Length: 287
Length: 263
Image 1 (cartoon, rainbow over the protein chains, first blue to last red):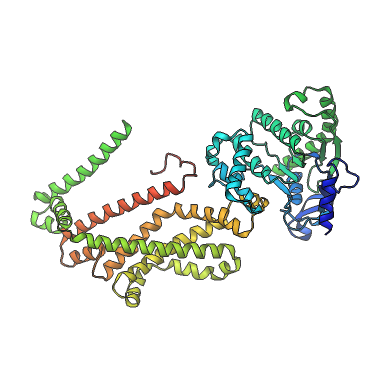
Image 2: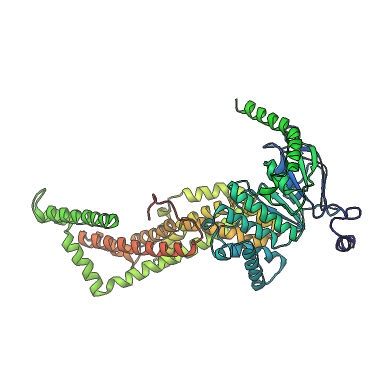
């Protein structure tokens, strides 16, 4: 019954009024250790992070700082060794059914066509085959893939595969979007196109987003708030920076805004030492 | 152009071999022709015998029986291999407990089982099916086991994030992944099903290609043995072509293999 009340609360209040609604994702004092007890490797420690419903958060940090680990904890794919993960105020048990996850690597089923890959996402919801197919077609058309519905993933380009994966995630209409360097493997032009596409989709139907990237410019141009993590091991959050650039934004144009440079400078000042630290560690490890 | 040249070269090798065979057996070069023809027959006689076998129509019965045994051995072996491959891959304890026994059973040369199977199942087709089964089962079993265990973890995590339950994961992720591995070994396992059938027939039966070859051997009818081998080779090539066709139909989603492999 408490979940029912929560649902009603969410429906009646606008997503941006934060006083009463619990955060979509809340990590409280989260630590994640791999391996057993004393000999384990602590990836992240003492993480406190809350994403309001409809808020776009970008997480940046040096490589290997455990950014993806945080997403996996929010998705329920990893159980934190310490601390709590709460989804809309309820502790997360098992997988996070209210979240969609866009992986860095190719995660489409290679034996299914683009259409089948997207339509199958509705099967767990009990949607009929015909309706699922029809909705999948609609989504693929929206993402500019109408001509490619019957292609298998290996016949699509990297950017097209990402768009299929995006459709697969969004067709379920999840309330939280978790994205792990989703545009990382793409070339610069495709990244911009994908970034603008993501912003358009998000503006039309605002979700809480946790977007992990190593690209600070991408983070600023997309997000409402940029979270900076320190170098691992036992990485933590060392700074949070609100991005007040006006929306709607164009990924390419927003970078020319003087305010963008100002924010970039400010964040980079705190990020630089961590990147150098991570780099020095990498050098030490490989020497 | 390149393709044509290759085909011509392939045909040239075949004709060269036949001519060499003919010359060496038709003329007393290495030994008197009576002697060479007893040991090696002649290509013309072998081809004439093959023609006679088909013309009289008797060979069809033997071919049919060998084909039936091959199909049954493959069907049962693949079915069992898929079932146990899935079961063991999803139940780690079961796999760990049975591991040494499976390795021991697989290490056993299957030919020694043929007389036992003849004793248990008689001289009809079922003892040959059993022999083929023991060969096919392990190939498919190991491939399916591997396929299910080595499902791409990202694809699996993604499917789970889409909310799939165990049954849906089985249907959309584990099953296709395992099938891929099984089909990659399809040529080998169909080949082994045929080996089981022919070896079984050879060791004790009253029909089939293996029986035909054994029958000819027992009366030193070298022409008959070679004719049987020619028929068997063509039979294997035809089965392999069917397998390739099925494979292409079922694995359309796979990227084309790099061109340096065999077609």
